Length: 140
Image 1 (cartoon, rainbow, N blue to C red):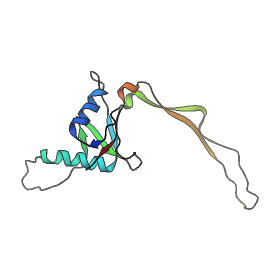
Image 2 (cartoon, rainbow, N blue to C red; image 1 turned 120 degrees about the vertical axis):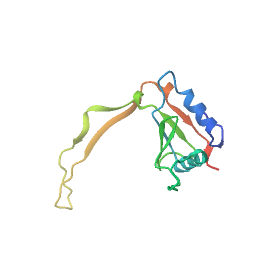
Image 3 (cartoon, rainbow, N blue to C red; image 1 turned 90 degrees about the horizontal axis):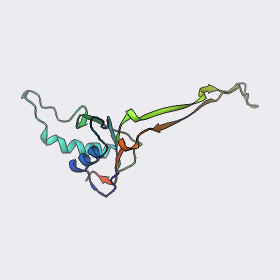
Image 4 (cartoon, one colour; image 1 turned 180 degrees about the vertical axis):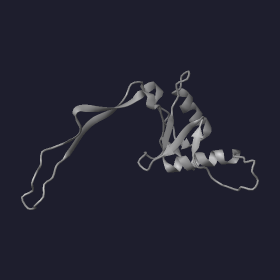
């Protein structure tokens, strides 16, 4: 985890990526905020070249860092970039609580019935050494 404040740059991303990589094991996706995603896009845009001179398409359909897709999410905390390896993450469901229904309930003031859906589980990580976080970064 790297938490010193500063503007997002390629060197910080490289260090964070390499710190959680070992041999062939590396992050398989990077999650961040829209602001940091756009900052990264501005870092790689000057290196973009096209051989087709008839096409003047500015922007990218998707971004990658070292061959790993970068995505953004509205709920990602500001200034955070997660380097995640899904091989070591698993969604574990509590036995008997995988979208089960409660018994019917009839409110006293309506001619309807309701049922609640139950789901109990946890996202677990079997090897935290291969998960990384770059925080305190800004887009400016």
